[in-house]
View 1 (cartoon, rainbow, N blue to C red):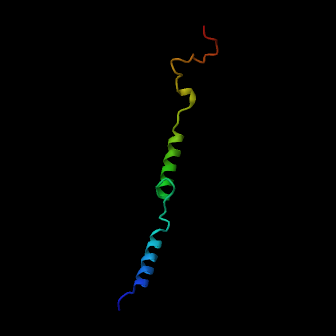
View 2 (view 1 turned 180 degrees about the horizontal axis):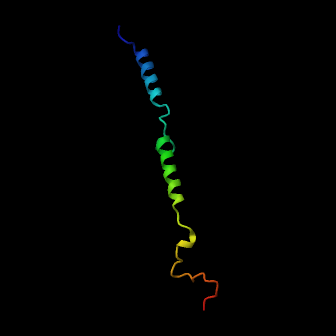
View 3 (view 1 turned 120 degrees about the horizontal axis):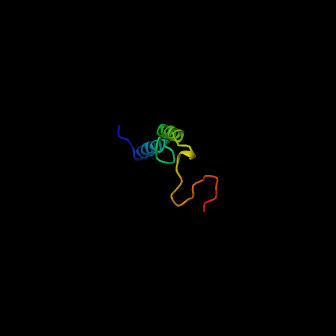
Length: 70
């Protein structure tokens, strides 16, 4: 039995609408699992940050020794 044009159009529309469903992607174009993995990696990197005292001041800034420069 051949499929009529109305049924073919309805079937095509149903398939197209089914393809438009959520594909588990976030606004950044990554999946939810990938976003969670990126967040976990960012937290790990944040935990490895050096304390401010460990970073020397730039050469143009006076050293913070507690006495005025000059």
